[in-house]
Image (tube, rainbow, N blue to C red):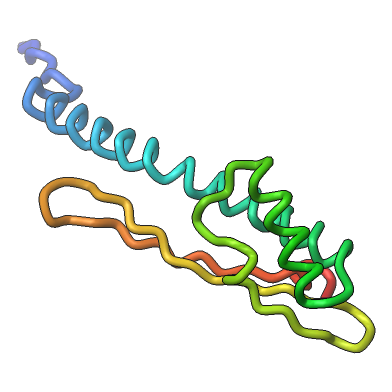
Length: 122
């Protein structure tokens, strides 16, 4: 005797799909808030490398960074927040700042950005 079984259904249930949709929406919202800060970090990194190449003294490096920051809409740090040192004959400019991203209510996402003009040269 051949008894045919009903094929069991496979896939995701409606509640599973709803849960997945909510999780993806929350990840999309957080990503939409994080991407601009990451983009600003990359812009700051470029401006720091440019300022280190242009200026020889601490005031010249800070002024060069401030000029670039005003053009590139950098508002997280300014020239006075930069740490300027010398490594041999090279000017090394370092920076560090924190970015708080409000999520909901009292919850925040804290991202600590750090960088230097010497990154990639060592």
